[in-house]
Amino acid sequence: MRRLSPAGSVLALILAGLAGFVDAVGFLQLGGIFASFMSGNSTRFGIELSSGHWLEAGRSAAVIGAFVLGAALGSWAGKGGEPSRRPLVLALVAALLGAAGLIGAERPLISGIALVLAMGAENAVFQRRDGTGIGLTYMTGALVRAGQEVAEALAGRSGHGWAANLAMWASLVFGAVLGAACYGAAGLQSVWIAVVLTCLLVPAVWAATRRGHLA
Image 1 (cartoon, rainbow, N blue to C red):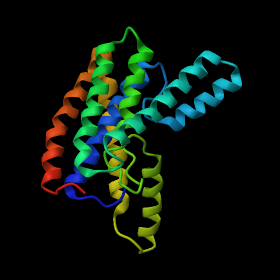
Image 2 (cartoon, rainbow, N blue to C red):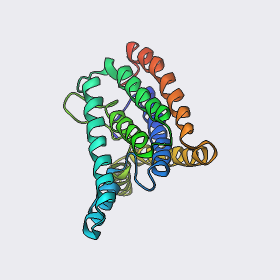
Image 3 (cartoon, rainbow, N blue to C red):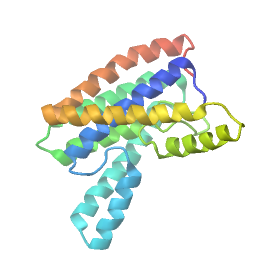
């Protein structure tokens, strides 16, 4: 994870936890398709194509396409990395999550697609103007960097950068635990917890950005 201000690090951890929560809800809602982990969905898509399961392959393809569209919408809302637009990106995420709750569990694919769009858009929160950023909804890169940082630390060439990457992973896992538990208790309506949290983040991020606390 690239260096962030203290407020930025806290926001990244919260958003990783939010992603884990929504991904667990989406996974259960979509019957085993991830809402944010497109590498897993791509592998599943390939297996389904190989097996001739065309309907299942079509569902996986729709989810992958929705994630790309969500990422595009998030980047558009954030003007490709404008810090002052972060609250708008979060408002978009909240609106998409709310749409999933309003559509309801009776239309699992459509409501699941809304969750996927939200997760794609969330990755634009820390996008930078040069196109780089922080992946908030997938942790493979964070785990790779954690391993690399451990190797560097053992060689005496770096500090404790591995801890920040492991913290992001742990936050996502914690969110997934909560998401699965809440889904078991309330079904898709548990997504409203994520909506409320995201709505609360909008004014907090707006204020922190104005004060220059987010980087």
